[in-house]
Length: 299
Image (cartoon, rainbow, N blue to C red; front, side):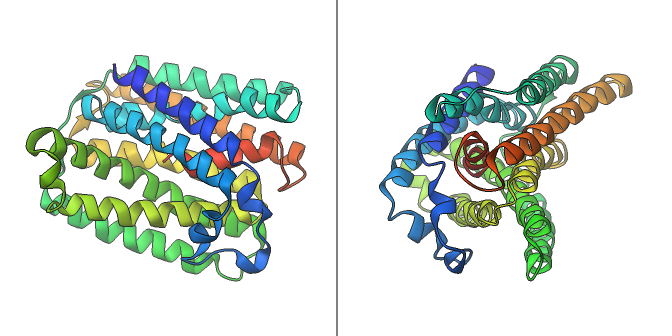
């Protein structure tokens, strides 16, 4: 059930972002970044329609996290890139290239290998208070440092630094979503109003989306997409195993094979990012834009 729900979420994220693919890069450079970026994007009807589809994707993701594990659900969301290829190609009247097919095969093959070899077991619905404190301190230091380091950089390194920070926050958002869903199912809707996880999820979600859009808006699509889509499952693996007590295998060989599967998936994402950036001319519309915007929604 968790696999089916995660794949449904990936498809919805792809559909939503195909509808809003051009909007983020249509804003002039003078309006890039800052806390008001999402407000400016919200004035565009196409972006709002895409956000509605993304919202349905989030509900499917939350349902998947309620019954599944972080180490399974978040890597599965990487298939949103694969779904975006035919959707974006059909929208713009393009054909999916050979490099795209190779990248998509690496993503799906690596993910399939991970799911088979990982054999995930165990896990809890929420991390301990001490665990969340450690997560907050480490994430603040890492993401804050990445944002500061991105200032004044050229487009490609700025996109990579901001994309890395966004990907880390996407993973944390998923962990918070799992905790919020647990509160909802155990204590009801009213309990969410007094649960700190709810407000932390809103704050982290806003920050991750802002960083994601700022990364994409640099025009350096390849590093923006590759870092966002790669860091999300990687961060989730760390969170799932270290904070949520999830285990990916009980033998060293099996764990190593599962990690190789994740490495193949990340390599496929990098191939897709570079391929779409080349075909897109570095930041215009098209399939490249679709894949780029999927990174913004797939958290």
